[in-house]
Image 1 (cartoon, helix red, strand yellow):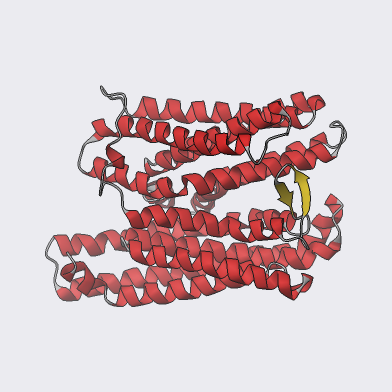
Image 2 (tube, one colour):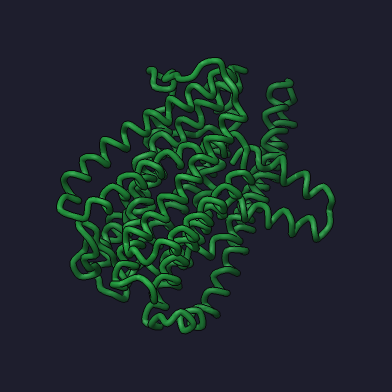
Length: 456
């Protein structure tokens, strides 16, 4: 997210309540827009297709199929997302812009080949025996999503935030319209709409990259050379995406909490909907995270390192370090306060929303737990973002590795403990990880001057 602070500071310079509202709205769209659009788009297709698609179970099959596509594509591309973005940022810092487009196209081709191999293996093994059109659509959707994640995070690194949101809105708009148009064809029609919309989204992202970074070279794989990408970032991207989906996968394949849907795919009706609904509550927290961390913190972060580069006195450097630490504490406190309000709103309106959607109130306790967990995830993202600013790659790797381990163990224990504990594994895992991450961050900030000077 480095760079969004420039836009937010421009807005906040007007110093009035409307500017503050505009900044939070902008940050909320940037931070959670694509994720929310995907959730709302897929759920809207399912809701509007219930009375048309026959058999109606095909709607559930569509939603589960899309969920698996999203999870698998994020995990597969996770190692490349952070590491490749850092590689491109380094090339731009070295003023080697002519290397950007060829390596981006190389990364897309590399991703295409990896996704095609994985998708092809599943096409002929796990999904063998299913309808051929369904398998082809799943294969195409998986490959497209893998390409989209790399292109989207690349453009995020290039600070094209609003363009990404608009393209996701266009892509999911086409997805919804096309899926509804093809819904008489059942599961394959809905999946066909999904693939069509994501093809439009992918084309839009590619066009934006090609227009922004012209180059005489067409293709390069310099990013794959030894020591060109940080291994810690490769593993961090993988661990984080695995951790986010691990509790869902455990519930999907635990016999007591899941049911078969189609082919090798299973789902957990008791767990899936409440947690995805809970993610809608992260918009306020994401907005606060971006506004506070990317403005107040970044301002003192820049001043601190400028003082070091320009030969500032030790007193000046320590004072700026203290101001930076203060902004971090204030930012995290504001994130938790705003997300706390979102949690209270969910607690007050949860039963009414469930009644409106025709969902059993028995799911409410799980929703409440998931809303708290989603708030903790926003806090974790803020802390990881600070670690990235400070270039603490090993610390991020440790935190995300702990996230994988704790989420897997505690989610398994929650299933063993019974229904009243469902969701507690994910929430407790995030609580542990956030506390540990804050402890590590505090220790690193205490020694920031020493590490900045002595570890060069």
